[in-house]
Each structure stands twice: as C-alpha cells, then as structure tokens.
Image (cartoon, rainbow, N blue to C red; front, side):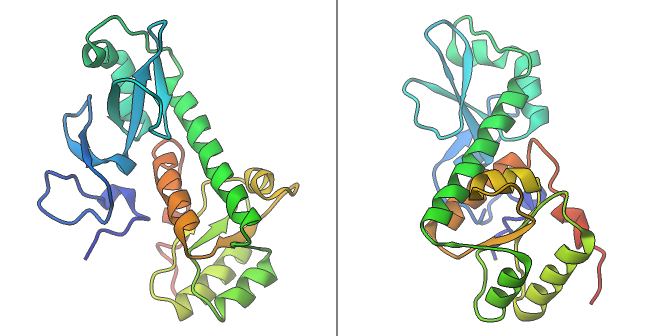
Length: 224
C-alpha cells in the first residue's frame, strides 16, 4: 500500500525499496543527500546576480538545486552554504529564505483553490459540505485553522462514518481560504476529486513542511 499522503512524516525516501505513493522523478536533496520524489522537495535556481531563488513551480530556467521541503532543511542549506557548492560559484542565500518559500507555497495553494472554484469543483459552507459528503466522496476537506472545534469535528465524523480515510487540510486560516474563494472568510469547504485537487494536495503537503498542519492533532485521539 502507498504511504498515506496526508502524513508527511511517513512518506518514504526513494532509497527505501518501497512505494512512495508519489509520482515523478527522484532528486537528491543538496543538504541531506537523500533521494526523494520532486513533490517532497523545493527547487532553487541561481539568479543572474548570484542569489538563490526558490522555484516552487519547478519551471524557472537554469540548473536547479533541490532541498527537502521543510523549514529545518532549508535553514540548514542557508547556514551551511549549500547553494554555493551546488551551483559551483558564489551564491547568496538571504536570511528568511524559508519564510519566502512558505509565502510562495501558500500562494500556490491559494491559486489552486481559486482555479478550482472557477472550475466549479469546490463546495463551501458547513451545511453544503455535509450535504455533499452524504452523496459523494471528497477529494480533500478544507478546515480553517482558526475555525471552531465543534464544527470541524461534525464534518470529520460525518466523513469518517461514510468514507474510510477522508483527508483534511487545516493549515490555512479562514482569511486565507476566503482570499482563495473571493470571500472575507471561509471556515468549511472541500475540493472535489480530480486533477486540480491532486495539484493542490502536492502544494499543500510541501506547505506543511513550513507551517503546522493542525489536522494531525485535531482528530488523532478522537473516538466516535
């Protein structure tokens, strides 16, 4: 069985002779020297003025250096001068690089949510989400990190009662979800299954290397 993708701590390295549950070629982290699939890493390129620039979309031209997608490893890359070695020339890695990566990953998540809304693949609102769950399996549930415990538990318990392992993303605030969906605040939503949902998940799992994923604690000790 593939490792569950909503538990980044259990996702496997390519060097482990098991399925990762991810797609794409393997790359070596410039800090840890471990091999991972690309969705577990952040690509960096060297700008013409010699600055290490995060390329979270993986599309900027030039040679890339790959670093495991978590704050500790990116900070270690800056501290250890990894980028100069990776690019074989003087390369400046500015302080606050991990915060920049977090902002870019957050914006990537928001962009995917906005595109999903325009494509009609989003359900927003407590009652609307619960009604959808009674008839269709969600791609992923979205719960605001600052939402009420009672509300998210009711959504979770309903999803858990019908579907074996519903996935939840809880690292975005109600204001950030609102920004994605063109509203002041959003507490409860879901993405329908499909390619946009999978793209959002890839961005989200990387984001949780840079900010807490509260859903890991919300439901771990709860019983129906």
